[in-house]
View 1: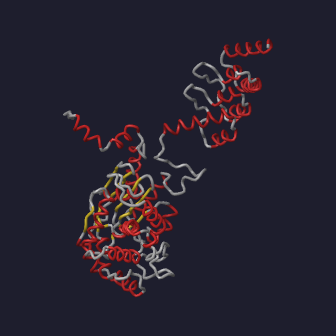
View 2 (view 1 turned 180 degrees about the horizontal axis):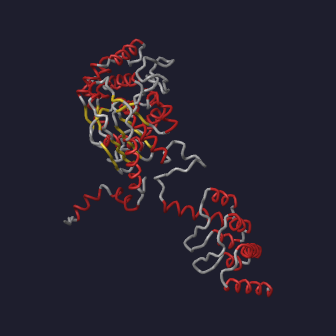
View 3 (view 1 turned 45 degrees about the vertical axis):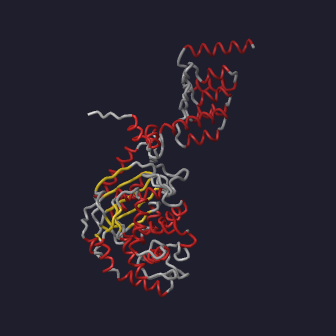
Length: 481
């Protein structure tokens, strides 16, 4: 059945999405070949699904109810391309994945200087629920329980008399903005479980109170209740990937186009996610994966590829450090295939696949750079191209090779390099039927003519009688002149 749209209806459909549609038609998305990327993601998902190690967290009764077979991955790029595979519509609690979001909200609302009067910026080297402070008697960072509890108290104090419920509603709405108005819920059963089994967090709270870590007028019990509520916020892989993509996009939600967080808040949040986000595995994760991430005991892994996309992985079985077994495996395989690691862009590093590359643009740039180097006689640049496995026989829109250009300009050293070292075929013709030798003759570059003729005679006989005739004519003309 074909649907016909009136002009106003068409305008309404297209109007608000004209930039998105233009990008689609022109293949200007951050991932030009998105279908190929999704095929790789599906393969990595299947490989990670084979990982059957780990145990579902049971110290919070509600978490213990999840099946160990659940496994989902969703991604959202900074321009709104989406892909999901597996159990991506099942709600789960953020748990510790809420900590970077709480920190980002605090930075956005109160500023970095004020926030870091109460919490540090360094990895602790201890377990996330350790009763430990830095040498300034502050929690080490916002990604450990002590830091998150202090930030909860700060947000409560700054809420100017609002009840815990109202403050929580404000934060929920903020997270919904990060998620592009997609699913953000709350598990009251998990909240009650957190309260009933939160002895360690109560101990941390009293320790923080004794060390005067809370803001003035802060209520420790209210702060802990608020912290338990935040940990009990639910998302799905799909909505979580949009939150991650908003962080990847500098605080602008890729679904709504709304600026939700300041650029500074996002930068500082990603910095601490990179150094402190994966519990005691943070150093290993930064070394092997090299991307900002945060894990939670629900089995969630919030992964950010800055300026590219956000990913939410979820699988309840955890390793001994409290990270999702399948989530970690997926992240490691992702970076082993794609050049997303923070330092994969270093020169001369092992080549990995870059899904951001546009093959047509790369080809055009390569031809332009090669031709310009030949035109200007830049032998150093040509050597670099050859060492980088660039095709030295690429042709421009006139079917000319770098050898044609160098011969026309009289750069004999370049001609010798292209023929003797790069083995560029001297018999290739441009669209006018001219070989590099013809061009050298036309522009009167005798030394180049001699070099080309010597190479042709020594390596390959002339292909046609026509070329011999051309040489004879050139010799005759030179003798006349």
